[in-house]
Image (cartoon, rainbow, N blue to C red; front, side, top):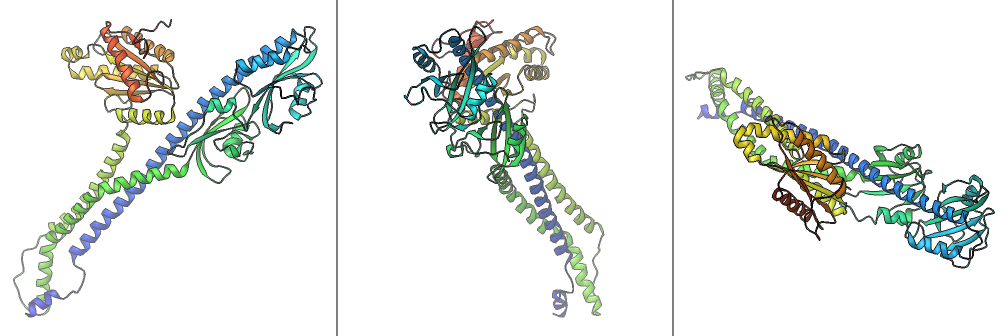
Length: 537
């Protein structure tokens, strides 16, 4: 009995407890480190992607606004030419302005003003402004400078917040006769709202707005903010200096945002597309949490194995310690054979568990990188394709789809082997990457089928890119020593479908017709006339 009482007495911490604690702490530390590193890596990646998407959005919108203002100026130039050749006191001036305003949707009102700032005619004519002399800063600037101008936002005599676009009038003797102007009512329905549309609630909180060259808001989804000056915003400050780009900043409401911004060249306005940084952080937290939940069962199993293994590996040492305790008390007992390799293996187990978690972390990171990449070609994969098309559908972004397929690819595999077939696929992927625009997305759809996505692209642009790629493939020798041809089908949203599935189905039908029509050709899908070869060029 005395022997067993001595064995139960604790004169120190058992080696098994120490080993178990060390290994479990190593597991916990490694898991925490992987979580922190993974969180930061995911956050940085998603932030960069969000910034880039916002910059692309701002650039695309700036092109649209710049184009429409060019059309505005041309329209006013035509009106100026009309009044240059006709008496400005012509009683038909109001009727002509009514016709002009009715034939275009640029301006809320159009006015004819003489060289003294007196309103000669206006459309729509409410009977209050004709005959009045306008004294606003913008009108005086137009009379003084005698050149095409776009004013800063100001409150007109009608109590409306407007932007005034003017074009000077000179008669045949080059005498200044006044100007013709178009007004845009910022706090009512206007052409800017028509171009940019009504922004719906976005799942990630993104939205865009427009400012003039002094930082005054011209367009915003929250109409109460129109006219507000946000020049203190760093992105807006860059716009006021004529710069475009992207940055993480804090807006005037104290919200941390990821902003992309661009300048509208013709009017020096700026467009800012931004996403709250907190939404990116929340998304990353969700990803990390899901990773932790997936890893938890594996961690639990490993922990149990470590506890069991540590007890098994240290059993000889514990037994030897019990015998040593008996010897210290003057009792004799047979000492079992003890070898040093047991403690070495315990140390190796500790390192093995740590290495296992490192491998798990590396694998998790690799899976994250590979989630949207096709391993064979390096192009975007089907997961990315479905994700971005779903996003465009939600935002009603127009786009074109080019679905392509290598002609008689099975013969290539059967004749030259699958390794050569893989080289042909990579060859096509490289040519596709070289031919597409920077804003386009090239994806592997499956097998020898590939898809090119053209955001804000139409069928004409898609056809030109498709034909360029097709002709290049038909002219260049593939890795098998001869050219390999392509058949391509084109469809566009929203003309050919109300969803990505319908558009891709249309492109697939066009591709089928291209195959059926003899291959090595491009077909356009037309919901009303059926698939057809385009006649561009």
